[in-house]
Image (cartoon, rainbow, N blue to C red; front, side):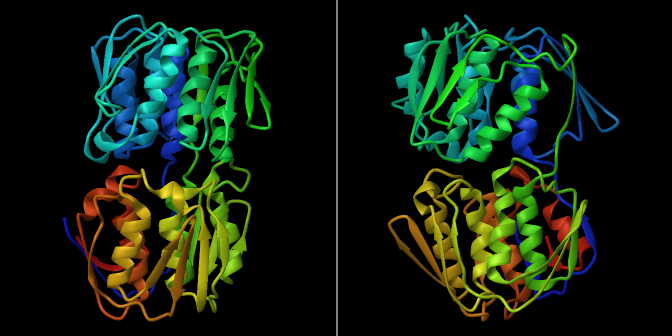
Length: 424
């Protein structure tokens, strides 16, 4: 699909999309909860749908009605020999350890860029926990056969916090006691906070967190929910909301609703970046008003929130002077190599991006040129290009724009609602 976006002025109020980070974790917790779970405000992105299909394959009964998802489960009881994670990085990294709780052999696969991402982590770690693992040379498909037996292990947190998320949930479900997960080089700590928050909401044991470097299980599950009964509301998404906020800073004014200021989501850090850039912001309890102002280059460390790189590059393109974003080394194994895809597509718009080690430097000029660009089949690249188009000199054509469905299927419709002149 091609989307054509012409320079536009935005106005109005919009609600941020549902958080797929929260939704997918809730699906995993609902599967492990032996009883009935009601999930309110369930997500509808491709990654969310993949998570629902996974928990169904692993034995959960799922019904969606009137904006609620009802999950009935008795734990891990696979009804299929295979689970398909779509293109969800969180899905593959979280559900592989959870699937390994079963004594049945399960094949785990995916599609798109997920098939080429390294999965050596499981070859190294899961055998230490009594799980038989067979991979395709460190790539998908994987075959795992448990049951996983919790033990003292050490993992590299620099690879992705999503691996740690899967192990934390699997350990809790297996009744881990007196064992620890040690984490070298912990990163994306806010995402771990989100995982622990979801676990707590579902009455799972929340391990003792020793500065994110060690998680100690004492065998004491939470008692804040009735046995087998749980209700969870999926919060709105700061990752998708970041694109709306940047769009407002470039071509607003707009008002964005639904983003919790007390959220543990890592991408809430977009607010700090916007303020550093000089964007006009008014924060209320239940909404954020954002409007154009004179934007200036800024320094931002995105090591713990690498998904912010695409909206931050769109913002930096309209800032006077240089913007430096740290954490570029964490962009390699995404839906695309985002360091290269951002450099390539924004280069077509006349925006110069330099890459040096862990730093990305964007040379802003306020003179973004319309061009034909590619999403690289990456949802966040597609949205970044669309936001950059709002004040460009001429129209922007984005190929493979349907990639937005991975996380924010209503993105283009929401942009149109705010006044964007676009064709899909």
